[in-house]
Image (cartoon, rainbow, N blue to C red):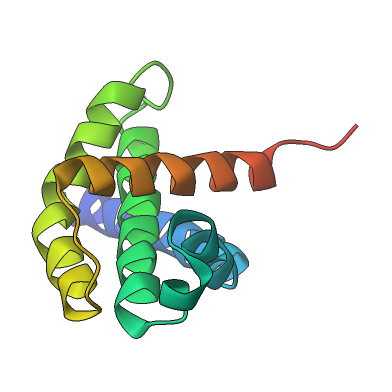
Length: 126
């Protein structure tokens, strides 16, 4: 029985390492994504960058969760709903601290932009 537990824990460690590698690959994009979503003057503010970073981290985490469960494809609506649900309170607080008025639909827009950028980065070049 303990052998199964060890293998399971090793699998979790491997999946976590994949996520860290993916995050490190895309982390420099955060400032650029913030610039796409918010006016350039406000994109330099800490709250906007932190909000986009939070959404990006959550998107990667949700993607990993669905990939690990074998339900990676055809679940975009559910993944978006989870990202928005998880991040909305913190994102609204971060943006508010920088004087950016937002609501849940703004968080959904941010999540969609983050996913689009990550998908574009992951797409093979021809």
